[in-house]
Image (cartoon, rainbow, N blue to C red; front, side, top):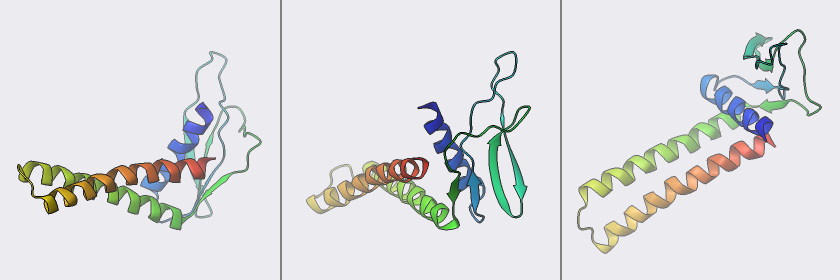
Length: 132
């Protein structure tokens, strides 16, 4: 399970910090030093591609294939993040301004509430599907 969480964090970081380039993420194996300390991840750019891996005396990879994160995936990631952010802010704004909402206003409020909850689920599904 820790490897799955690390893959999700690597995909998220690449999508946030490098949205306009294609990325290749090698499934990191945990390299340890003789003092059993975890080695920090390191990124290097090669031929316009970003590669992320853990480095020690030698680079170690698991048997899984590398994860390719395309620009399209990153744009969808950002669209879902924007949907969550906009819907959450609108939901919060409407909750503070409509103290006694009408039936129609309550419907709009419920719609924004559903949008940010569904967007959060979509984000977890998007990252989980890419990391698996």
